[in-house]
Length: 93
Image (tube, rainbow, N blue to C red; front, side, top):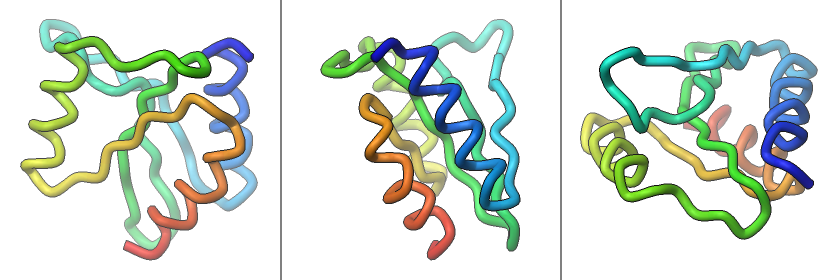
């Protein structure tokens, strides 16, 4: 499964639970995660979508560390079967 297909499935499942998953672009600040997940009840996280088995680049890992250091949750998604667990975790935090 390609990265785009996994990302599309993520967006669909977020919408199904009443949230939104806007594409996140940050001009001048490369390496940020692909999507911001916003769920009812003020729950939020960042998701980096990858093709199965693909890993984030070093700059992406640095941005993930930065965001986590600020207290945000960051997920790397490379299998659509992870989506339900990720959304459950976001909703309970």
